[in-house]
Image 1 (cartoon, rainbow, N blue to C red):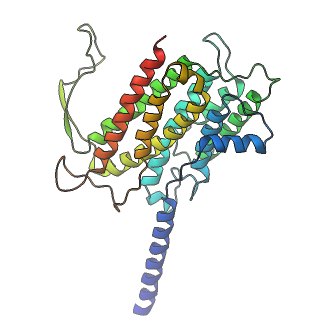
Image 2: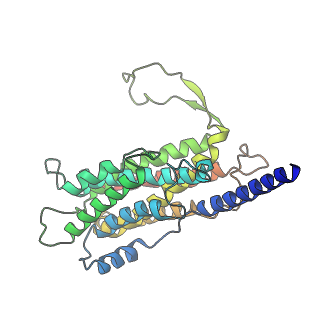
Length: 328
């Protein structure tokens, strides 16, 4: 009997080791890619003309496809081990997905439309909602299936803007379009920066109604409150930020190409390049086996505060770039 129990224990240990090895492999973050080269290769393979907007659309598709095709595939909605026990990579996926959703929405309501009274592009009208299904949906319809449908609709749109006979399908490289999307990116980075900084806890003054004494809100909120990210959520917020900045980094590189003339006219290209450089720093290798949460200037590093520093600087530069684009 003891020998039988020993075999069961040994089998369980082996299974745990195998699950751990798989989890480590599946936790490998996708590598960065050259957005322009990747888009040109896709245009060549499909024998399509490389036009304005092709790079941004291709980058959105590639980032979304990466969520589905990376090691282990899409993990956020898995209900079996070892992926159900993993939280860092699902958090990374969610951060990237949020950036995908923002750009897909801007593609639908801004980049593809000449003015507010123009009609929506049919393929983008179908693609954008597909990305909004719950990231944890695993039954019918599953998140993977819906995201793949969205990518397929984006491919239809990309093929149509590359077809010179499709006059109704356009990508408009304008300063106001770019600024509209950048404002959404600002909000994402601002939220991530706040959540990362709250890893050590901070007393936050309520500034929700600042600017006008007549401003009001629905319910009462205290003038001061203690903001702190839960100890259990610190690594999740960190990896969500890694995923979001990974996706945003590629999107900014894509718009740098597609909006090159706009940026040159506004003398804003160097500002965009500085934002890209700040975001590149967020993708440096994490050498620690775990995300540390030291207190302020304490003995132990605080990875969240380091990430918050890069994101805050990128966000400040985004705000300046947005204001620059708004100028005549």
